[in-house]
Amino acid sequence: ETMKSVTGLADMEKRVADTLQVQRVIIVPENSDRYSWVKKELGRACVQQMKEMLVPDDIVAVAGGTTLADVAEMMTPDSNFNNVTFVPARGGLGEKVEIQANTISSTMATKANGKYRLLHVPDQLSKETRESLVLEPGIKELLRSIRHAKMVVHGVGAASTMAERRETKEETLDTLEQKQAVAEAFGYYFDKSGHIVHKEKTIGLQLDDLQENQTVVTVAGGASKGEAITAYMKYRPSDVLITDEGASQAILGLL
Ligand code: F6P
Image 1 (tube, protein in one colour):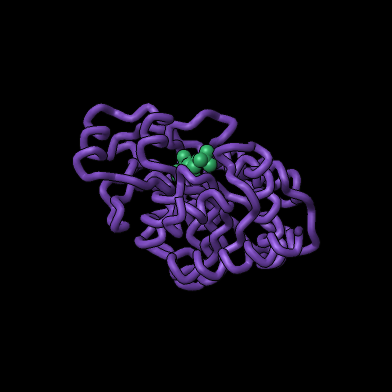
Image 2 (cartoon, rainbow, N blue to C red):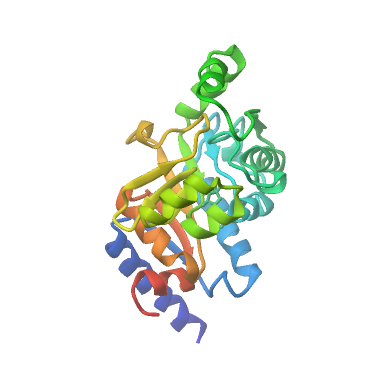
């Protein structure tokens, strides 16, 4: 029985990898929309990948969200995490402190016995403030670390869920509706073809700066995220996708 379901997941991993053109897909059982322990399993699988792929002295940029918070919760030390630095991928995106990238970086670092650096920038910034902030030596240095990150670990959300969870301006909500946004990642919103339709204004990682040699690990599960994951992967297939059966069924059109 157990063997059968493991084989079933392996087969599903291949099909999802083909559909999304993602090199490596890891699927954990069940649907995180239904059970919260599934998100912890996504976290555990992600920590395992990080242990396999990172080497001492690497920099890892991490995003926010409840899934990444579970990755942080499942973090344990490893010899490969020697002197690894955890940095937030981007500045504030209107999330609660518990699930902000800063908080997640520091929790991961503490649990991994690594180091961390924080990015202290308010959520809503005028263009002028952003332009002068990025010239501050401390922030400049941190932005350099983000650009040099060996690995970027992030979540994906359904556009409407994310727009609601953040305090999104009416004007932006209109844009998202008009342009039929279905996915969100890093503060960017995407339509179902994977085109960027809106970008939240904060500093840090810019998606078009991502280099080929940086490993992008996407962690997102739940049937409700199937459409969002598919759309986001059309923008740029990640190197690794860690997801669950629920999302996979939606991605494969089985629901
Ligand atoms: O707001 C940070 C963020 O990483 C978003 O980019 C993403 O859509 C969301 O969190 C995922 O959140 P959750 O893991 O709670 O679904």
